[in-house]
Image (cartoon, rainbow, N blue to C red):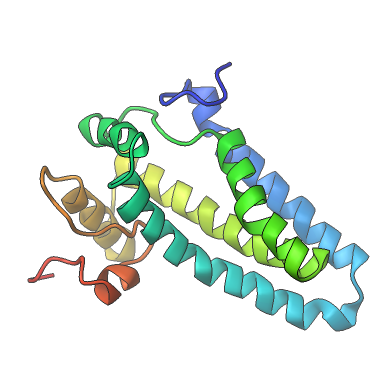
Length: 183
């Protein structure tokens, strides 16, 4: 198995949908069983902040890294050319990035439990993004919020489009003016 391949086998592609929920559940159980109940409110706040920060991370990574920085831009262009191909970041790669760029700095700056809670929030956000991105390309939309997200992502995939970098929300597209002028 190639851990860092651009295009994945169906099993490797689906690994996120098994590994992330299991890792998130293990993290939740660790927080619940090994931290004093009195710390739970601040840990819950750290988790919610991690989830909120994920949406900005998602936008910045997509707009400025995947659409701007080589070799990531070239790899992401391949996804735009073949939107139904099983192209994406490997589970090992995304876990290592989250550990190195979220958990480790927070662990060094604060403490292990706050770092874990915030990282769990980021991981929940990443899992939601991963499911939404997959769904945008592979599932039928039956109306409502999901249909609007799927439509926005389809518009993002149009040749020459510089809009809708958010997959899970258009909030940052609104903040940074990357929504269509009529949208």
